[in-house]
Each structure stands twice: as C-alpha cells, then as structure tokens.
Image (tube, rainbow, N blue to C red; front, side, top):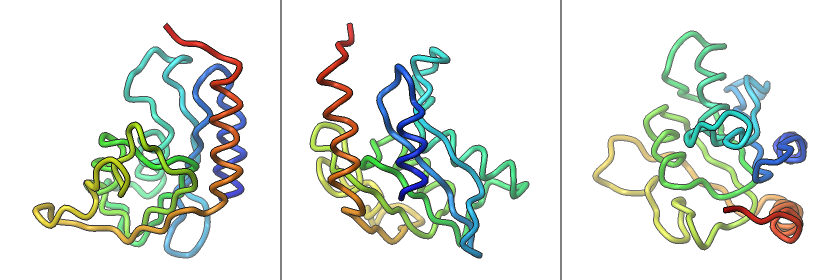
Length: 143
C-alpha cells in the first residue's frame, strides 16, 4: 500500500489515487496514478492503468494470481475491470461512500452472477489514503 500511496502523491492535478499490481511472486508488476486530467481520458483511473500495464508486462490479459492494491475503493468501472482481469485479490485503503463498488455503495466484485470473485481486503492504511483525498479536495475545485 505504501507504493500505491507514493503513486497517489504523484497524481499532480488529478485526484490522488494510486494503484499497484503485485504478481504472484510478490513483485510489483505495474503502478499508476489517476491521469484523467493529464490525458483527458475519463477511463484513466489508476486501477485501469495499472491493470493495463500489468497485462502488458505479463503478455496476457488474465492477471490470475495477482493482487490489485489501491488507495481508494474502486468505482464500478475499476471493480469491473478487476473482475474481468481475473485478479485474485483487491486490497484498498479508504472507503468511497460516493462511488465505491467493492462493498460500500455497490459490491460488484461479490456479485454471484459474475464468473469471477476476487478476495477483498479493506482498510489498509485507510487513514493515510483518506487524508490525501481530503487534502486534495480542500485545495481544489472542479467544474
């Protein structure tokens, strides 16, 4: 999670969310932070970027055995991407009561109708993760 927090701090003008994908051997395969403002891409969430980069490293889309570690609870898009990528585990820090889809507002990853259900670990360095978000929105306003 500390690596994901470091990524979040590098987000610049974007909402400070960081993600890493850890391989089955415990090595970090990929890392990313939000890049929506930087790229103008509404799908450039940290999780999606990290999953894409990890798939490129592995040479395949199935991230079986991998763990997605993210500072903020994934939204529906990112939770869906994690399920479709077949990650074994999602670890996140702060809960997102406005858009979270891994247990708070929705629970996409535990929907029994889907063909894959990753393990979920919540609250890892949650205070530090939430503080980054709070500080950001204290100093920034968006249209």
